[in-house]
Length: 105
Image (cartoon, one colour):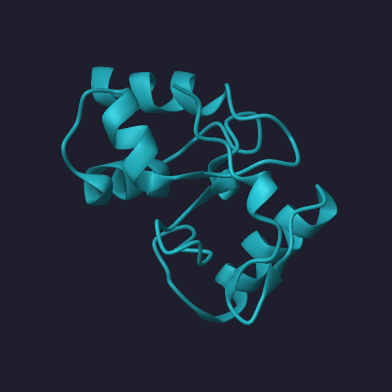
């Protein structure tokens, strides 16, 4: 079972298309939360992956951010691999193609 907050985060995240990424900050604003960190915590507990594609959320600095509660190592490399399989790449630690950023509004 997920909280109402987590459900809002997961539902909003499902609007991010394959091959695109968004930021923790955009998700926070979109669900009416002032904390990108709270978004990260909700995504860390995502029981619906990959249907709810938490790997499509990156940092506002356009770096990959974290994945499954970790910010490095094999887990983060798995996130980068998932994104690469969707056509999203990073160069020198930042999003290589800014056009892949999905920030509607």
